[in-house]
Amino acid sequence: MPVAIHSKIVYNHVKSILQFLPGRAALCTFPGLVIKRGILMLTKEEFQQKIQEGVRILDGATGSNLRAAGMPKDCCTEQWVLENPEPLVTLQRAYAAAGSQIIYAPTFQAQPIALKTVGMDAQTEKINEALVALSRSAAPGCLIAGDLTTLAVYCESWNPDCFDLLVENYRRQIRGLIDGGADLLIGETLLYAQEAEAILTAAELEGAGAAMYTFTMQSDGALFSGADGGKVLRDLEAAGAAAVGFNCVAADVLTPHLVSKLRRSVKIPLICKPNAGIPTINDQGTAVYAQTPEEFAGIMRQCRDNGAALLGGCCGTTPAFIAALTKSL
Image (cartoon, rainbow, N blue to C red; front, side):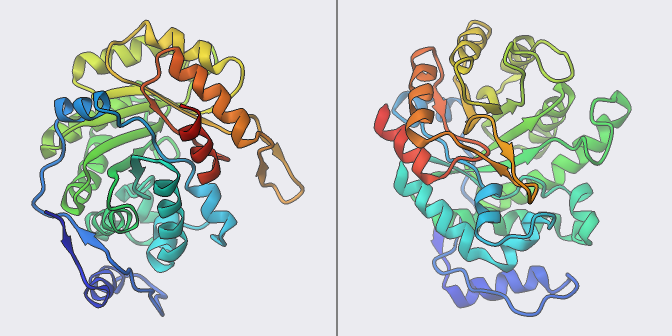
């Protein structure tokens, strides 16, 4: 069973992680934080059984909502969340209340190569551990997915010469995700097949359990590298992925057709986690999404009917979008 940690102990736990970081002055406590050490991750079969039993609603956007709550645009999200946990906890509690059954931990770019830019790479494992535990405290009734993403900003993640670098970065992150008690892994907003292959390899080497993979795609199912998305997902299915699909694609009239096309490529659960339509950019350089929760839910209902098993939102979505989605299904 998960072990509830008193907020004072949690404070000291996170303080021990952040004491190595420059400029840390005051930290907030994490009421009710749960460390789930010693609990095995779900296997692929166990996770797929949960889907058959009714687990189907993912969460929505994290970054855009944290920026709305005051997070600076160009900061390290993981660092900011550790120093300012309340907005993340409030957001994830709202997602759980709206119907989310799987919550993504805020570990999107908590790989050493990314954390090195803010001098935090030495604490990679501890940071991932703490962030998973923070999500557990926010949504104790949900499955917590340890979140990994593309490293294309930091290396040529499409280049075979970089494969070992990718694997080592993902291995260190996955160690922390396992130690924090993640129920499963999610590789999301991936751009290249090699990134997913590296996550899969790293997960196997670290003894991780179920893992999902989603790519940013064009409306015809091609990755932005030009690769056939259906074939990439099919290869991941053969390699042992628990679920596959797409995220960070505009939810519009073409999205249900994309679901139909990908559904024909794989038999495992299909993930549909699109943005709240196509944004406009305001004078401050911020993406503004005009799609309403009800419009989003209508599109997602069609995606469900066309074969998507796991549904959620990406950029521009909020707990209101997840609530509308949950109500519509």
